[in-house]
Image (cartoon, rainbow over the protein chains, first blue to last red):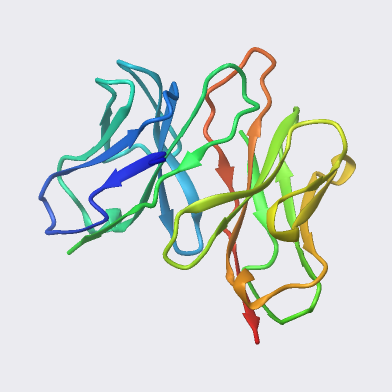
Length: 114
Length: 117
């Protein structure tokens, strides 16, 4: 019963490096989300996707790109990492069919950019 | 756009004390309301949710919350806390679209709850 799986769990980058965070869900959910969590800020939505091949910007999209090539996977990319992107990143998914659905969260990826 | 305000950023209680965490939201339409909990080193777990109907909702682990529409509030309560309730608590909201919608959740900044044995 995996649910939402995020890889990697931890990563340290140098400023300017690139990386991709992977989110995989096995619940056949249509909608997927990427959030970042910063101390005293709660979680903020970066990007989301309503289905394979579609993505949309959330509240804080700058510096990130996403792709949803397969329904079960949602990738978050950092092309040129900056110290301001040091954060904990959470992926979530939920079924479609109205807004009365619960989002299920992954365990998070802790990213440090030096 | 919605916004969520959690009044208490840090709360320290003794075991068996009663708990109430405040949450107010700002939005002109119908909303869905959630409380999530994050135990140390773990991911977010849903405590309880309100979509419609009875404004008093019960969740897991003895938690409950009351939706008061006139006050735009959704406060979390527990009559008697335990040491294992030490965690970060987040109130969240999204707009309830009749035609469906993929809106992400808008979270409050969280309340860090520490229960002393």
